[in-house]
Image (cartoon, rainbow over all chains, first blue to last red):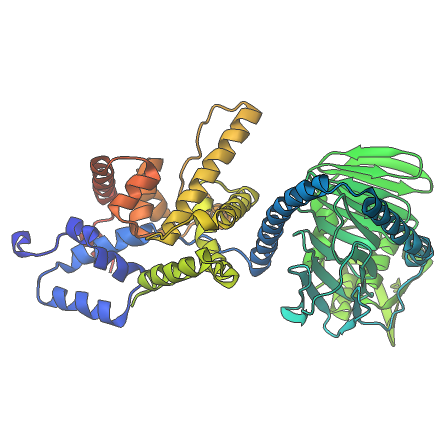
Length: 398
Length: 194
């Protein structure tokens, strides 16, 4: 074919905005339009293909943001906007206050605030003591108790809870709470995740928390101006939204963890005889009753029988649970059984002669417990006996 | 109406509502544009955190200056420019902090982590040839082609976002197309396989 007779060459096609549009967002109409030009001999089919191919080379096949991350970023933006708004109002307040010299009002305000703060804190000490020591009954569902005493039971195996703005709460993408609450710093929410369940929680400041089975967590409806404090009995993995002005504090029964913006995993089940924290990124300070420890990324701190050990670890092993995996490295079989027991919410007993078998490998906990155990039979030379909601594992005898 | 034009129009309507104080329009502006900014950012850095920080700055900036804004012809483009400026500022701060010599973020077409995994595991023929063709272009040539063929920006807009004059943009684009065509698999050669 003689190129001189053609209307469009490759270069000209690439110059044509309608052509670019047709390639990127083709419609029936546009396909017909170009097909016709080809059949009329105004475009060489090969040129058409080449021009199209070149445009397609530059299309994005990059991943989109997940809905969770989109929501999380959005709540961060809203908080920052509100913050900017508030700081403007605060400036205004300061001007008014300084011009109206009224010590009386000032004193009155101070006193009521003081009283208000003190009264519940005595109660809360008792309350916290119970929170840190009591175990979750096995027959419960995931429960969220909001600060206005609204109790929400979640029947699904897994819950995703988000605090979008101050008042809005969603559970598994359904808005469950939108009336505005009378908020003050003392209003606390409590989330209980029994054995066999797991949850993910997004706080209003954008912090993401994965909550492992058998864990309770208390967090305020709204963080106060100075710090962000939550209470944990169990195991959580946190990705803390950075805010230099408001440190994030995780309080557990034997240690407090102070951070600015990091991700880390903390395991602090009251019934366990060890406490453990693994830092994935950023930095944390761990406060125990009489000591303070600083951790670097990929380090783990381990408390057991009054001893403290800091070591370099592979953090993936410690956060695999949030993806439904368990990675074992030289771990006693009894320890694995405890973790399975917690994750599946079933009682598992192990006979003494296999308690100390050392295991290495990866377990897929998205599978049913029966299947998972049957896989282990061949590898470990064991047998198991199933009763209602309970398993007994013992050595296989020939 | 095709998708590009529909989004352009929708963005303009939302923007008008937003600058007169409509918060719902602000939310929708975010939802309509956040993925575009995110993907655009991935061409400059693999760090999702950096990108998210910059997106946050774009939207809070726009919000706090809403009374001073006026009509904008192409909202998406305006947000992209804001984003790129923020990203450069961010990089500048980082380089000062870490004393690195690289002065600005470099545009790339294969930062996306998913792509790299594919490359390591198994490279199908198509991916391989795409990679080969793209490798003849310099970062700026890749950038200009991306603006033109993926984002569908006009020459004037490309001038603004790349801080170049009209003739240079035209030349850059022209040279890039020639370069790609040189290595683009010959249709006749492909035919032999079938």
